[in-house]
Length: 363
Image (cartoon, helix red, strand yellow):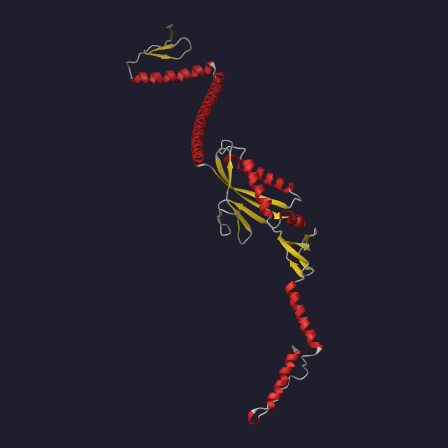
């Protein structure tokens, strides 16, 4: 190429001397630019090397949440490459990057903006693998469908062995079959009528089974983080029977509650009546006690009065009463005889002008 350029400039010099009208054009290459020099050859070689290095990319940058598996001449190395900058030998070594962040595999009807229903396996933008519901046949050959979500992640330390053994589709070869097998084995042990009542137990057993089966795989390639049993879809006739049983149970419980409420109300009324009876009894006892106390007080008073009476005092009182009777007879002449208390024998008074006589009479 430098020789061709020099020939071009030399031809330009010759043609400029033969131009019409005596006009001469003298074109000279830039000063210090010798295209035939060794420096120019080195410059081209350097550019070529830069282009080759750029295309070959003898380095790799692994981000957090990823792990690299280096292959030298097609053979995977046993030591994984973690986050950072790593140098490679161009055309001899290459790195396969695997995701070690937590992933989700979703079986069943999709919901939400990050899910979509699909009859085939699919992966959306946020790394969620969507698969159809899992069909399970119970002891009586009745089919139910199970929707589950499993959260898992690749073990970074086992990435080289996992990639070497299962390839890039390791999830479809390890996780998916294990989930399907565990769900079918666990749920298939029960009848469809039992499933809604032992939902939590089934969820725990499925998670335990998946974890054990994954750990038994060569190198224990993945870690099961969590499992959610989202939905159990029963056959329509079984679903209707269960709903009828639930309605009957609710009605029975409602009747039981009403009976209990009536019993409580009766107990309440009984307690109120008992309280009233007790109050009346207490009141009667109070009145009786008051009467007894009053009678005792009256008897005590009578005893005091009786002890204070003497014969002279009684005769004096008798004379006072007789005087009042005489005064009354002076007004009422028809009154002839009067009886006054005198012990066992009453006193008989006769209204005459003679001296007052007292006669004892037994009646």
